[in-house]
Amino acid sequence: MVTKYKYLLFIICGALLLMFDAVFNGFPIVYSDTATYLSSGFELETPFDRPITYGLFLRLSSLNGISFYATIFFQAMITSFLIFELTKLFIKQKTEMYGLVITAFLSFFTGLSWTVCQLIPDIFTAITLLSLVLILFGRFSFKKNLPFFILFFISAAMHMSHLLLFSLLLLSLIIFRKKILPIGVYKYRNADLSFLFILTLVTILTMGSALSKSRHVFFMGAMVEHGILKSYLEDNCNEAPYKLCAYKDSLPRYAYQFIWEKDNSPLYKMGTWESVKPEFNAIIKATLTQPRYIGMHLTASVKASVDQLSRFRINDGNASFLKGSTLYERIEKYSPGSISSYAKSKQNTGRIQFTNTWNSIFTVVIVLCTFLLLIFLIALRKMISAEHINMILILLFAIILNAWDCGTFANAIDRLGCKMIWLIPMCVLLMLPHLKNTFGQRSALQSEDTD
Image (cartoon, rainbow, N blue to C red; front, side, top):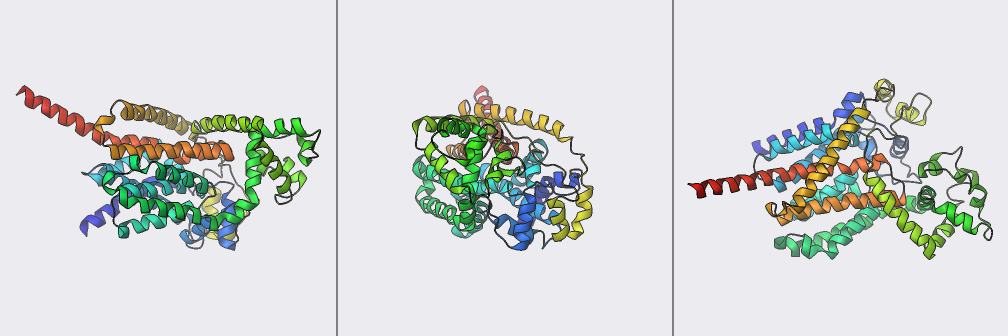
């Protein structure tokens, strides 16, 4: 029991480290979408463009609006717990201390703390992924795995992008399971893979309505940003009477402008998200069935994926939401006790320019760790077990898949890269003890030979 309490204490310490950005800011970090999540959770209404899951989590974890620091603590505790559990799979000695070192490094030298401290569901993409890896490689009993299955399902249901992301990831693992999963547990993990895939599909129950109402708008926004819509309209407006033809020369540059800027976007000049659905779907179908536009989609997808992989700065879209804004009004309504600290936070008083310096540091760390990880995987792979290599390859594949998913079907922005890129430094830190032990053993053998 003492060992369990000690382990829990380390996890709590890790969580407190991950809460640094919220404490430093004077309030959890907020985003424009936070307003929608608050409304959905406290009004118990499913938004038309996202599932209700995270809204409910906000309400429950904040103790019905008593404190949003409690929400950040829950997010930090889950993240800290998963990092410690993964550390236990990689190293056998001094797990608690090394897990705390990893968590501290990730909190201060990557954007992980910022992601954990935001009142949006971004951190749950990595939580879903780490839960999946622990289920497949942990060699746990079903009883020990059950919390991970529950965590996987709830986290996967937090955001609409997770349905495609984890369906494709799990399909890939199912296809290559003989090469990826540990030989000793391969036959037992077939059922786990199938169950995880079913759980991923079941999340559509929480987001099916939102997907039906919004996917045509999000994909059209991506087509705007990729330049595909403009090319299609220029080629076809003389023959097809699309309403969008009136705006083909004034389309916005970015997807978020097309989707969210109500004063300038053609979307809102044409009508509602529902009313434009037939025309949008007709255009989308045409571009996905004609060779010329299929090629444009493929080229744009590759470019957007690469672009997304290079974007991972913090403070992306974290503006000041002052009195009179929707977010301010909803925090005041649902958590009146928090409004004072919210109004005085560094974010709301324009005092978060320091993030430019942090972003420079984060960029150096990510570039250096990516370089080191490639060296480890290519030149030093024989020093690391195949099982650990496979875990890292799954994490890297998920990072790439996330970049493809976000870049292709939404838009390439820093926030969507930041939520996953910290996994690269984590992988490097998890591999270091193996290299140290290997070099130490070689040195010992050489000493014995010399003697």
